Image (cartoon, rainbow, N blue to C red; front, side, top):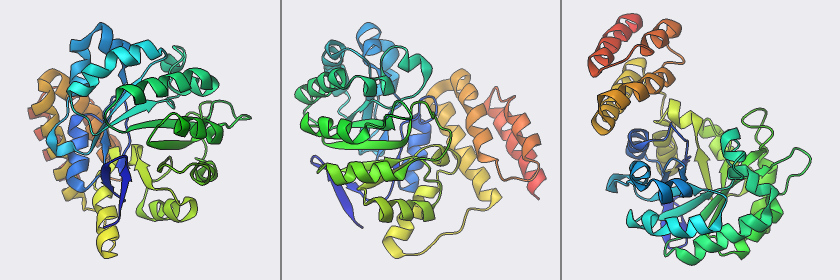
Length: 324
């Protein structure tokens, strides 16, 4: 197996699970790690939230040993709050700290956080320097191609972050204005890689083993990150790892096997989150698994009514009848 190093953290050169708010929770991260994800990230955590309401943020900061190597991702718009939040972040002993400077969601951007920082390199620089100065573990940053369609500043922004002491940069090849529409521009990721000496991670439009290999070959990045596809098909990490280790291409799991994976995932949700939150999260988690199933619309409709684990077991029985 080939490895990369971010700072002193050794990581398999397979694929990382992207940080996805309200999606990449502990249950999904554990499932993806079991399948071989190289590194996983927490959901985005607000530094102001950590400072003002530590108890509410604690659940997002918790790390299980099975998840390592693990990165806690933080966001905000004020270097002072980043500095104040760092002791709490570090209490949880992350392997990496990631700063989100790429989130395109309106409520984040309106607060001058996430991808809004790409319009304000001076503020982004102050934030990066603050976190690096206060972190004993490697600091990484996730950015986008740029904020505006006609002003892609990922290369200059990445060089600035490198000068701040950041240990790796993840680049999503879309602008803020694109959100998740259109095609991710891997050429800009390649240009970032050519202009910095620290590891570069590619994010965006990697939905299969074939595309992952293409991403590595065409951009020369150090690592590839998978987001939405991993939430639908967490076994993609097993396929990637097997191919990297042996050159073999594993078949897609059968519908029966997918059902077993889904049940294991949702059981973890109920165990970790309790019945009320577990049921709420189970509805969306279950729906994602059934895209290619026969009678998928009927199955997904039934997912929306999950309110207990017994409902999940009923769903499993219903799906088995549909696929027989």
